[in-house]
Image 1 (tube, rainbow, N blue to C red):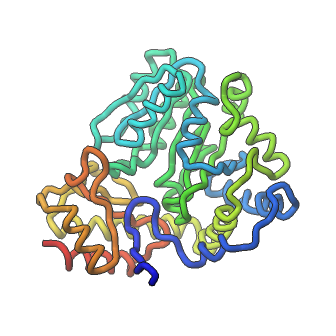
Image 2: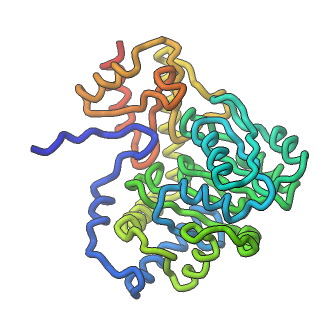
Image 3: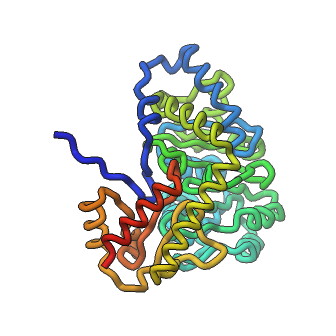
Length: 358
């Protein structure tokens, strides 16, 4: 007997469509042959459009964390400043240290945003050659002011700017070249609405030159190796071909809908969830003006039993939301609106939340 399907409204992995799963079932092909090269080259123009870059977009068989670590190893020779405002950005500080780098945390409490003036003040102390920022801190629903921070980074031309867009990519414009981002990275399992296992990233020309000068950057996430293989429409190591087939299918979906329409849909769905939050007497964990467009982190100011509520929701309606992450588990809950969701699917979820909320 098959297990009943539980629909995910958690902030990653998100629900994956039947169309995407079918694309993954295409017959296997060799990853050094002409069929793969055609597949790889064929998706590049649309990926570059989404990334807002003329640079090649690399595909890594890993989670985004692989590239996040790789960026530190490829770019940092002095000190790295890690902006930290939640669980995942806090972890980037630890990852930097584990890479043997001198890492400094630009730390704010969970739920607060990284402000441009904070970045300027810290970088002005000197000695940094890399700055990392999680655009959309999934753990607490904070969206950091990327354009304003990017403007500050232009004042420090020797500092490489690395941006994790895992839960914001394709939900809003992130023009890499225009903003002067040196490494823009994302993963397959959030707004792209694919299974986990594929990281996508692009590297600026100056960042690639920096990488070429660093001796201990390793192999698996060596940016130079990615660039060499890219010239032949290949990847350095065996790629996860089923997920690349899924990516091609998903790009068809995105560009059929239209990129601007996709951005507008995510904004509208996010507003739909926000209206429900206000109407039910809950509060937002992130402050006004700094809230994610792809998920909502809700403060449990009504002091409900979040775990029991989620259990009822799962058992009665076969939906799942997230009960809070890390040290704010139970004190918050998170609702995703990213991927393939529509106003009707969000409305169905919100009705189910009402039905099970006590």
